[in-house]
Every structure is written in structure tokens, then in C-alpha cells.
Image 1 (spheres, helix red, strand yellow):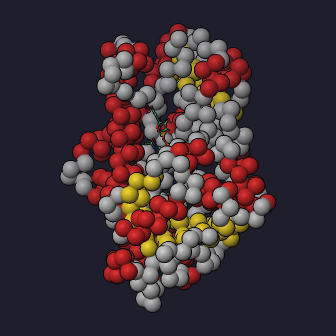
Image 2 (cartoon, helix red, strand yellow):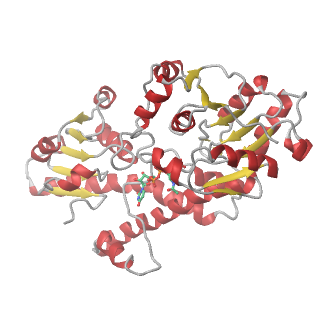
Image 3 (cartoon, rainbow, N blue to C red):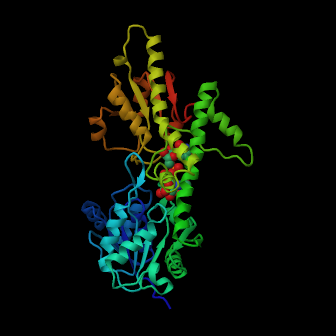
Length: 423
Ligand code: SAJ
């Protein structure tokens, strides 16, 4: 009979760790969140949050107030440890950077006790769970681990990748199926039972952690390849004078066709990163996955070229003016619609590139962002939609935020990467 888990420690209180911590705490399980960021820890302990995610604030507030959730910078003993730290890539060759997982494993190892369950939630390259188990075993030779002791191990280890969509995390945590890749059947069984605390969908047990790692990477690569297809179509359609959004909506009328939407590039910290982990594991075979990354990564440059062409066309029509007289308005800086997250945002990268190269004014409309200092120092002036509409000579739509779709479209020169003004 396995001990019921009554205390969980979540390592990494970011976009995945904090909502997960709050979810367990809302089910009246004691949760200790651990993060190296003292400001984040202090904020959470006040019942507040340091990230933007709908509905997260009230769940954290209630969990802290009722005493089920607290944060600290140093791991302490618990029955289960969930590691939800970043897994970026390094340098030009995009090799996975496991240093955050290594640091988390080494921080947790000293407080591990017999019968503990350690779950890696971070999206990880193939083999990372076994590598993490190796780091734990190295630090704790007094305990046995699944790689050596199998089902009889003192510590259970599993990979249970997060697969929630930023902006819908609180719903998707509960409603999405969960892939459980334990290092042994016992590891999987314990991990599945733990997630069943709040997951109403299925906890699907994989044959091991490697296939679970690959499943998560495959989900994001599937989306990246589909977006690359849409982005490539947008270049082809531009060449042929065809409206790409009309084209996609027509093709999607076929019962077995479902093309995603083109845009200014792929942003965020998942889809633009994870496919590279597959490429790193099988560089010779992952040709399509690599090409999709390259297509999506090249889209911002194409958008910049379109803006340059629009400036040229504007100057042709307005004799005597120079580029310094041309005001450009950007609509949207976030990495996708209706969120405030600008991390790895192609829209922000394009805007910064314009602000540093264009001699005229660069205005930006971003209804979800209030932090203006950094933008200002980059030469980007935040303004309202109507003001941008009036002031600018060239209008560049980069993010299809809901308010933009509802607003009056500009009448002068347009570069619309999202098809929001096409009606
Ligand atoms: N994008 C397009 N066209 C589209 C859809 C998206 O250009 O038709 C762009 C977005 O604008 C954005 C980027 O792709 O720049 C990524 O946005 P997203 O909404 O596709 O995905 P993320 O990064 O917010 O979340 C993804 C999700 N994965 C899948 O849908 C397969 C989420 O479920 C994962 O949990 C998350 O990655 C993650 O953490 O890995």
C-alpha cells in the first residue's frame, strides 16, 4: 500500500509551476513552492502573483490565505517533488540546456527521503528524465533509484510533461489528458494517482519517460510544422497576388484539411524551442522539422522587407518627403493574441528592429502592456489605437488582439501579417 501524498514541493514557480502549485493547493494538499527568485517568492507569500494568467490570481490568493500554499527559496522535505524549470537551448546550434534541471535536481537531492516521488514536468530533450535520475542518484548514494533498483527503488521518478496553453492554463490543467512516463510501472502509477487529484481528463500511462518526452516535443513540432506551412503559403500567395486567408479558409472546407494561420513568425518559449530538441537528437532524420523552424524564423525578416517596400511606395507617392517624415504604427507586441507576454515575441523583435533602423517615428499599440519604460528606451512609443490610426502613414498589424479586430481598419498603407483588416 503506497502512502498517500499529503505534501508536494514544486520547483520553479513560473508559468507552469505556479498554476500547478495553486491547483494542488486548491485541492487542500500542502504545497511548498520553491524558486530562486526572492521577489517571486515574496509576491506569492503575500497571496499575489508575478505572472499574468487569467484566474490564477484568485486561486493563489485563496490557497495562500487558507495556508495550503507557501513559497520559499530553499527546498524542504516533501513526499513529491515536481520540477517545472525552464529548458532553453544554447547558442547557434540549438543544443538543449539542461542546467536548470541539473540545478533543481541538485537542490532537491539533499532533502529526498525514501518513498519520495520526483516528477520532471519541464519540456525536455529525449533522455533528460534518466539524466535527472542519474544526478539524483549521484547526490544520494544512500537511496536507490529506478535505473538501478527498478520497481523496488526507494525513489520513484517520472516525466509528466506540461501541455497547457498560456492564457488557458487554469482550464487546460484540469481538462487536458496528461501523459505519464514513469521509469517503472510503479513510478507511473504513483504519478498518475497524484495528477488525478485535479485532472478530470485521462492520465495516459506511456511505456517510459523517453516516449513521453518525445510526445511533448512532437505536439509542439506538429504545430510548428503546420504554422510553417501557413507561413510558406503566405509568401507564395504574396508572390501570386492571392489572399492567403481566403485561400486557407477555402482549403479548410475540406474535411481532412486544417491549416493554421500565418503570422509574423512563431514566438513564445515552447514552439520556437522544442522542435530543436528533436533536431538535436536526430539531426540527419529531422529534416522537415528543421526546415519548419527555419521557415518560421525567417518570417520576421520578410515582414521587415514588406515594411521597407511600403515605406518606398509611400515616398514615391509623396514627393519631397524622406523616410524621416514617415510614421509607422505597429499593432500588437505580444507573442500571440490577447495576452501580455512579450517573451520571444516576433512582433517585439520586428518593432525593435524598425525602431533602430527607421529614421522616422515608430508608434506601437499594445492594449495588454503597461510597462512602457523599456519600450521607450528602445525608441518605441506606446499609444492608443485611434491615435495611431490618425498619426501613422504605414500601419503594420503583427498580433490579432480581439480589440483590433473590432476596430476601424486604417485606410492608408497597410502591412497586415494577421489578416485582421482584410474585410
Ligand atoms: N501561431 C501562428 N499561427 C497559428 C497559431 C499560432 O502564427 O495558427 C503563433 C502564435 O502567434 C505564437 C506561436 O505560434 O507566436 C505559439 O503560439 P501557440 O498558441 O501555438 O502556442 P504556445 O506557445 O502558447 O503553447 C504551446 C501549446 N502547444 C500546442 O498547442 C501543441 C501548449 O499546449 C503547450 O503546453 C505549450 O506550447 C508549451 O508549454 O509547450
